[in-house]
Amino acid sequence: QVQLVESGGGLVQAGGSLRLSCAASGSAFSINVMAWYRQAPGKQRELVAKITRGGTTNYADSVKGRFTISRDNAKKTVYLQMNSLEPEDTAVYYCYADYLALTTGWGTNWGQGTQVTVSS
Image 1 (cartoon, rainbow, N blue to C red):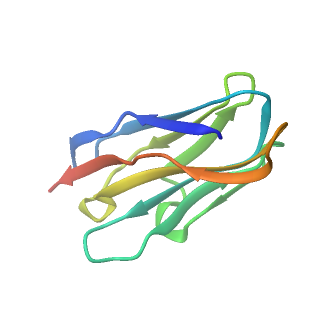
Image 2: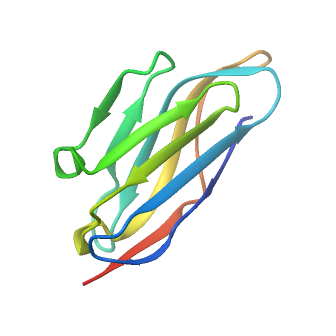
């Protein structure tokens, strides 16, 4: 199975920036879509941004123009650059990937989550 490990969360003031990273590890696999989701207290998990292997991106309307998703296929890592952060962006951010593994075929997995807190 492919493991995902996130890093880069923390506490920041409104208007500030953070960069999240998520590295995938395992053996003999290729990743199709990588994405970032977030879940605020009392709310459902929602898609923030996703990126295909070829680099096509999609964003939630609430983050367009402020967040940028990117990936390094050689490093099997996805990034989320978050600028102009707002208190409403406070949530646990989860990395997601769907992949093709040599031994087990198609699969999906989530990271453990990283807390992002934006103070007003």
